[in-house]
Image 1: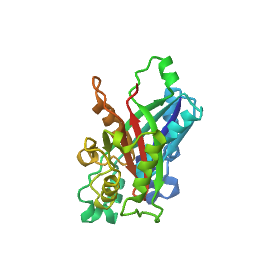
Image 2 (image 1 turned 60 degrees about the horizontal axis):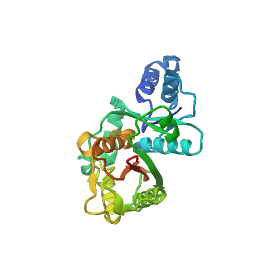
Image 3 (image 1 turned 30 degrees about the vertical axis):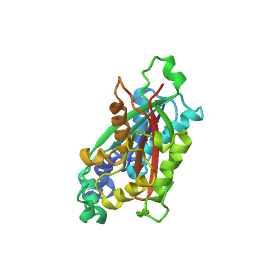
Image 4 (image 1 turned 120 degrees about the vertical axis):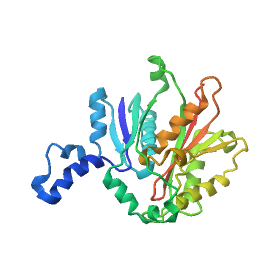
Length: 271
C-alpha cells in the first residue's frame, strides 16, 4: 500500500509553531523538535509509519486541486503496477495565519470573493486494484474510470475567463474513460462562490452538451471551500449519492487551483 496525500497549503500549524518564535527570539527560537513537521511530506510519512504502509509515498500540492492530484497520482501508481492499493488523504487546516493570508488576497477581499467561505477538511479515500480488493473481500464502491489535467497557462494566479482549460480537462477525462457527456448523471463542480473562478467552469459546462437529466452539484457553496480537500469531498458525496439500492451512472468531479490548473476525474459505479 502506498500513501499519496494532497494538501493545498501544507503543515501550516507546524510551520507557524516553528517560525513565529524566531521573529522574537531569532534563529535560536526555532524548535528542532517541531522543524521535521514543517516538511510537506512529513504528514504522508507519519501516516505510512502508523499504518505500516511500505509502498510509494508522496505529497501533491496543487493548491485547491491538491486532493484531485493525489487521486490521479494514486491511480497512475496502480495502473503502472507500483502498488496494489493507495491511500489518498486530502487535508488542510485553517490557522490564523491562513485566514489572514486569504483575507489579504484581492480575489477574496473584493466583491467577487464575498460568496466564498473557507472550511477545514480531512477526507481519505482508498484506491485499489480490483484484483487486490477482491482478494481481501473489500466492498468496492466505485471505479475511477479516468482523469485528466489541463492548464490555462496564462501566468501565475490567472485563468482563462472563457473556461478553455476546464473544458479541455473535462473532455480529456471523459475521452480517457470511454464515456461521453451524454452518459453522465451528475457533475460535481469546483464552484465555491468565487465568481471569477466559478463563471469559467459554468461556461465550459454549457459547451459540454450535458443531457437534461444530468445534475450539476456544487457542494462547496453549501459546506465551504475545503482548499485541497475539495475533490475528496465531492467524490465521497458522489458515492453516497448513488446509494446501495439504485446506484446511478458515471459522474464527473472537477477541481481547479486558483492558478489556472484544472483536474477532472470520472467515477462510475462498479459492476
